[in-house]
Length: 129
Image (cartoon, rainbow, N blue to C red; front, side, top):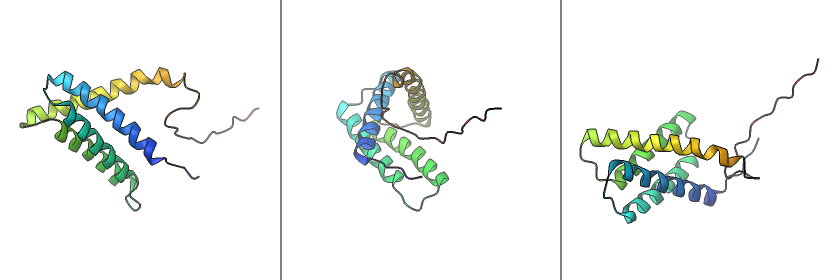
């Protein structure tokens, strides 16, 4: 099965998602990080995400590891993290916000005729007896 990936849509989707998550994390951390810094970190994170996705010879496990590292790099670019405790708090809040945002957006995908990001699956027909 072949898939078509529109890299511009993927970049835009990842950029907006990362911006929202970093803004939520900034609010939860009571940080004073500048909006420019958050936008720059989101753009760099989205670009890194697209580059990792398009790696031709990287295995699935390697890509998952690289995606995890890219979110850490994005956090590091957005906030001045000086201690391990602050870093752990930022990581937990960032990924907690991602979890909550994904759960909150699920009902709205039912309203769309065509989802923004389509993940196809194989449908198995039900045998009638």
